[in-house]
Image 1 (cartoon, rainbow, N blue to C red):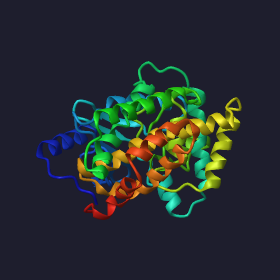
Image 2: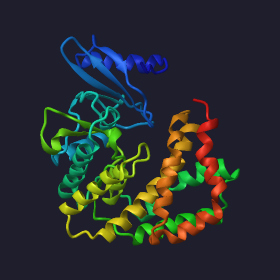
Image 3: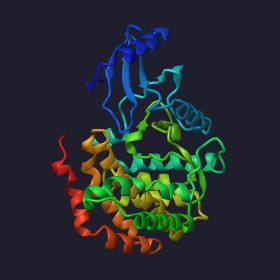
Length: 344
């Protein structure tokens, strides 16, 4: 059991919320933590279950979660039903989808082809129903997304180079990403989950079609390039995706959008996926150094392998040259070895 630290005021507020919602007598079972400040607990009553989201303000806010959940639900995507809410205190009572995350199913030996096909169908449905402008969502244009690679510069770079990048290095690196993102195909724009991978997907046996996939952790969604979520799914930083599964997902996605060329898809995945891998490589270090969560460092080698693969595309030739000179092989080796020295 993952019990949060004792916080009397927060504990009292949580107890009052549960009492007001009619769950005062439920047993709480805290779930393993994730990469945010949110915490989740399963509530077990005599004949019912629910999930509690504890999102302490000001570190977390419920508004984006409820807004994005409503948008997805209206498009036919399954998200947890909200049973009770206290936005001021940062508590939500949610429908309990169970424990059948795609991650757990894959770890138990389930056929990855069926699970990744279903996940791809969800992306296709989002493309069809939530493509186009969304004025209420944060907009992630090329300039905004180029700024997100600051995690690489602020956290991974000094860890491996023993110094922060110079002002000129920072400016050049960010500009190279901005230009590449601006010029690359996007596969269209629309609702982008921004963390679309098997940890955040659940199989719901009682439902059919796309509805059989429950989607979680969508509060950071925005309006941006649809290629980003596709890259997040098939170039997962947390687990290896078999080559044949990846190819099947791409074929399925393209069959649903035949106007997209294989060349555009490859370029979009390289650039938008590469930006994600660059950002996430820095995020793993930030989670260790700032948030006391070193466990994510075990994904560093896979993340950098994905980044290396992206950098082989001609669209990123200038970034490949920059990193070869400024962040050389020995720095990469140090990054990969960080998990060996980080206390667990």
